[in-house]
Length: 463
Image (tube, rainbow, N blue to C red; front, side, top):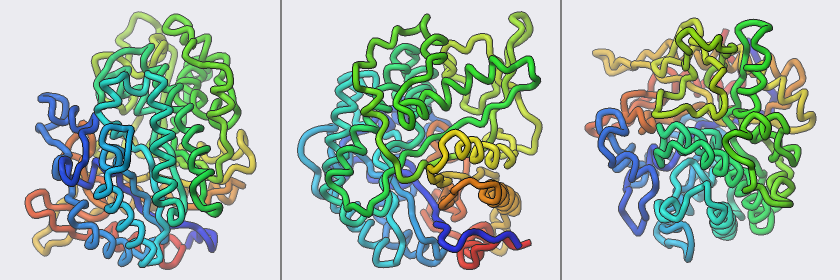
């Protein structure tokens, strides 16, 4: 059997808009994802997050599920418009009370609360004022962080400022396949910077309000970029600068990579970066959150053949890969998940070891890893999701290999606790280890949930 460190933190994860529902109840304001999902043609099957998994009303049931799984931590996100409907001003007490009950319910079950401040649901009022390309949004985000630190900071174990700012900036403002569905490359790079700045300001705010024992983190969906051949080294460099070092640079080193600035000079002059911004973005972290699903394969485009764009992020009106017009994103060999993503766990161990080499001494945590498959409910009511179990086993083995090679990996959160609203894919893609029946909201454990419970209980992977 493969064994994990004794104090390894086991958890599972969700996000507010994907599970809560209650989109217009108890004073919650609209978010950019309400607007996006209510716009015809943007989400598969016309699905919305209006009901989602009805977690807002079924929170006690879901807390009991977490306790039965035996996990030591639960990663959830706070809906900014639920606690501060317009993105500024006083707190919305019923919304705040929901998260207070959630945190207290976790603690009562000996589960550490891991709270993500921003998992993509920007208050629509802030988007109307300019959104993340507008500098004031970073200031508002810091004020929101301070409110949450004041309210929950005595009880939250780990604070994650942002979830996957790559998606917020590039999918939201460049390719338009995520909310707010804008296709403005220069605005996307401004959004990138203000997300980095907002992260640093939020860490400062939380450090001044939360308990001294609270850990500070951010979650990045870092791309493990590989080239088809040695001739593709520059394509790898360009993609890596845009997807990884655009965040790791300011957040961990206090500076944007020079090659990123040069690569994107035709799009923006980066004048939105003011003196001191990069230092503000670089706040000491206790742990870096890493989301991983599959690697990225690139090559230099020859300029004449049909250019491949199989980056796994949906085809939009424009590319999220700003100033990478000469880079191809190559479809990789299977097997694949229902998202069309290839299954290759070696990318996870290699990514963790890269972070270990580049940022020695920084603890790491897998804050999302999982797979969507077309689950079938058998006649006996059982969901035999062997492919998901195999995916999880492969990737957890990769984590142990990285640990054995020196990477300081402190925990693992499976995505996701339950089937939920998968953004522009609606409810067509099921990532959960717990099935949610769309008609009744009934929760049913899949075989993967039982398997994961055994892993959590023993700290070992069954052979």
